Amino acid sequence: MPLLAPSLLFADFLHLADDCAMLDNSRADWFHLDVMDGRFVPNISFGMPVIEQIRKTTSKICDVHLMILEPEKFAEAFKEAGADILTVHFEACPHLSRNIQQIKMLGMKAGVALNPHTPVELLQDIISEIDVVCMMSVNPGFGGQSFIPRTFKKITQLRKMIDDAGLQVKIEIDGGVTLKNARQIIDCGADVLVAGNAVFKSGDPVAAINALKDI
Ligand code: DX5
Ligand code: ZN
Image (cartoon, rainbow, N blue to C red; front, side):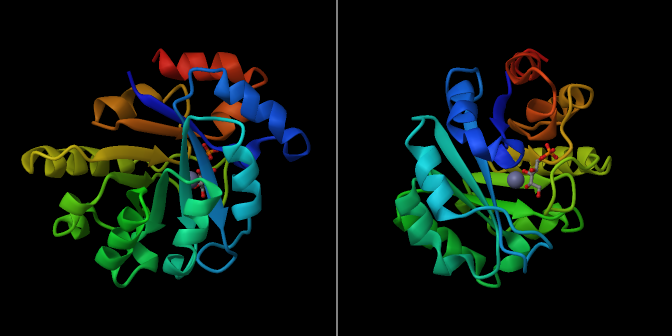
């Protein structure tokens, strides 16, 4: 059964407590929290003050996806806000190993996100340091986009890299996940599905969560 990480990008921010309670009482596994800086990605979302409030509503894993430049400047603040997993972008980190060490020293799990055009092979020399690879299946910055089909091949490749090395790294797929493509994504070797639109725009988020958990 896949782990499910609904993205709160499409939550109702005027009634955030209700959406958090719904997720907390649901079969969702992680809260996926998308932080955008308007520089690494062409959009701005939310930051520490919002995450701090979300943290109070749940003991589930808070999976914070930083789509920001210079994430090292803010790692400690996100730890204080309540992040359990802190994911930085491969493309934003010229000294990625140092970022991973910092995240782990702060007591969080370290995630590395890959943009759709970034080859899986580039992780070869650092995969053993990573806890979660967040593979983007859309160009980051916006929810509600269509899944890029080439991602299937990349998941298979990454699964092989992880298994060949005998590692326990989790593969998380982020962007355009739907009830239609979820089965194929899992069959390629993914462990965690992020879902924004598919949950929050479905009309019945709890039913959508159940359906995604049962695929
Ligand atoms: C995109 C974000 C995703 C996104 C997921 O930049 O990282 O987490 O919000 O939303 P959907 O599932 O609608 O693509
Ligand atoms: Zn995300």
